[in-house]
Image 1 (cartoon, one colour):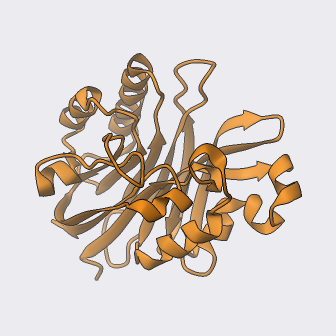
Image 2 (cartoon, helix red, strand yellow; image 1 turned 135 degrees about the horizontal axis):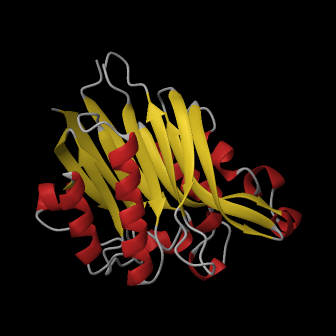
Image 3 (cartoon, rainbow, N blue to C red; image 1 turned 90 degrees about the horizontal axis):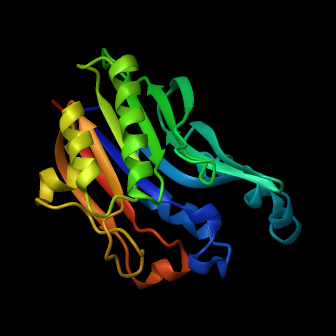
Length: 250
């Protein structure tokens, strides 16, 4: 029985470093593999980009989620959020366990920002209830984030049983923490870094994190360990740090 789940969340910035100076998807894949995560929540995954594929290896420039999954995560799901003339990007979930249901929900609060939440049900071996995994990327304005968190909470209350194991992770852009705390209280969630280390993780920018924008929320788990993966080498990786957590079954 899997009593511990290793979780990671990472905004890959469409496979590019900060300011889009270098394409870093291969380095991102190597780092994610080293984390030994069972389930990985990814934001800003680019599924198709016509211009990038002209200058970069087409196998990694397009279908990024499949490239990252490779032979390590046999199950993965993509949720298209932002669509533009040259392609689209969105959220992705990698899983070592079977993904049995997928739903991508539009939570855009304004026509200028296309945002979504990706909901996967994952069957964990020898567990009675499937894991509900929700990957999110929220808006840049506080009013938009409040509306989006309200929509996510409404969705969870309608579609996720109260006793089912639940993990919500991603880029919340909520560096003030105000909306996040209201959201967590409403759904009886633990923010894993607050629970384990008494304060949320700093995750942006990745090479010297100052802002607390990325988050992992959980329900139905005990928090065993949390870690921020950051440092100067992230200049060649992404603009966000990676957050990981080990969660034990209650």
